[in-house]
Length: 409
Image (cartoon, rainbow, N blue to C red):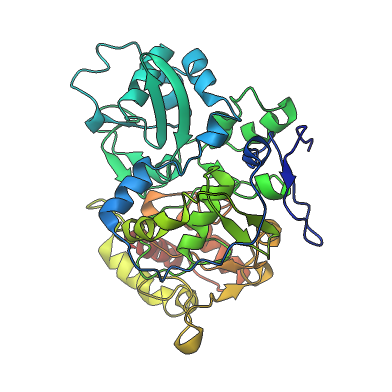
């Protein structure tokens, strides 16, 4: 992959890992633009006082952590939107509109094919996960928030328009296509971003230059789940910090010697907000399956299989249905080599642990495809994978019962 010119600094390159210099052609482009200093920052855990879920809701929905330095200064999205992004285009790439931020009949009075309407939506703070500053009728800056990828809407007004559903993964969102709209990116980099498709994002492409997008995960049902990342690199606030600084482009600090990343920017607009953000995330319950969508009798048989002959409950341990340690190792993730579970090792090899943790099973009915890479399009495919991997010898009826139980979680 080619690099843009004039990088202000470079991320330290660990042995055996190609880490890109921070440059204007990737999501770590903010380094070249704002020339932040690379230095050590303390490790961050989740056991911090001061979390407030009401403040956290505002942070989750509207706080950009100062990432306008990337989305405006470097990627120039404030130029792209007024020129080419109408509401129809925005909805087509999976952006959502918060209907509660709009007056009645808003869309009846505004042209959905006019980018000026998008600017007006931004002025009203109605585009979920996107914050724009509008002076007069001119869009002067753009930033993004956690809600861009981890919220959707209930479509109560129209497809893509409705009340917010925080924590739900936006599997309609095509973040790669959105980033590729930037005039600052060379064609070969745009081709990578355009290859991802809806519901997928690579949170390490800007670090190692390898193209391997993941399915956007949910951010609900995290209470009692210590390690949210697919590879168990760190606690929930570790990942919030990583994404805010290295992916969103926020103005803050992040350090992980395992990845050869050490970023320090002053003032730190990220770290002080992490406890409240975590408190809000932990307050978001996993949505229950729609009434009548699960065969309760079959699900009961499936639960017995899950904890018995199918051996699923060995790793997916209730009530969070993820790996857990007891005793003094409770804060250490229990991880698995890719070969143990038959997973593609590619993404694990790019992580700090080199392994995968068992995904917490919550609201599975709501967010196919499954596995970190989306390689299982249905819950039936998930069951088939493990039936083959562990030579379980399940009958078609047993597989169907397991699927019903998984749908009930």
